Image 1: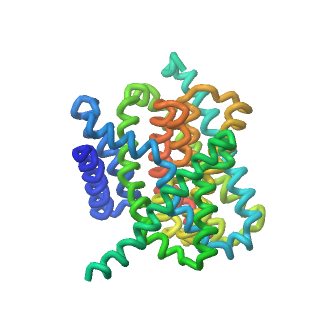
Image 2: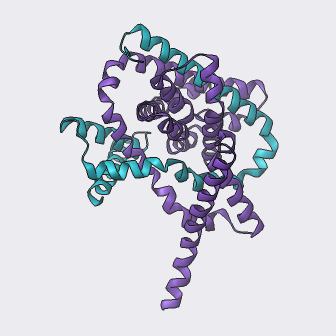
Image 3: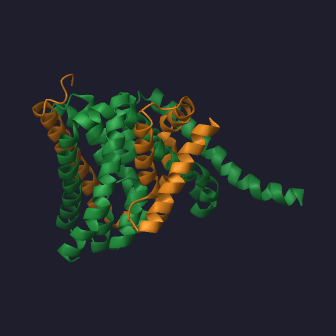
Length: 119
Length: 236
């Protein structure tokens, strides 16, 4: 448990430091995730039990972690009232198109490249 | 001295406990309503908490003093996505070309469709710029919006709503286009609806979750580099 948490926070810390040092426009945790994948693969691709337990715990409650930021919408009611039609239509249509294009491409390409024999 | 400390530490604690309690209630309510994505636990929680804060005259900053400890866990949770990715690494490696093509086309579609639809509907320039990175996970989106000149704090909310919309419409999109495998479903959920889509995909299967996490990370990376470039080219 402690080991798993230390690994996650340690990777995030290294990620944050790298981002600042190199001046990348990418968030630290994303870099930390890439670092952890590389580290796990280099050590044989086996995930330590302690790390798996903490990760499973965090990921199974991922949705909860978005609530504090989401409540921040209350600071933007003015803009929402002014432009809600533009915002609503754009978000729904653009998200549907994006999801459709990506999913459709992925499923057709996966079949063509023969990589997903058991898809 | 003791009462002084208790007074100041109890208030942040109160907002943490309240957030947890409201979220558990929302999850229970969501199940009672048949698990519909439209009544997503996050949407219900947000509505209840906003109503509570407004009716008690509490500022968002006061709430966030406590709730930031929950918000903080988004960092380690993002790093934790490495675990499902590692579990399915063999599959990821065999599919590197489809993954690359789908990421580039999907990311470009997300940005171009959002900007052009908002522009056609006559949105303000700053609103359009705020909408551009809507499919990207919120920490990345906020950074991008700061860079290109939109409303950063608004971006967090729009990203969240995008995530919810993605979960709501995904069954229809998948049925209409006959997207049936977990790899493609997870990947498109992660790319178009970031962490929300990933949370949703983890509920479909571990494989879907792994590809959703991968898509979320890749889309974030590509958008972070592509969007500032695109904006300077379009000369907003």
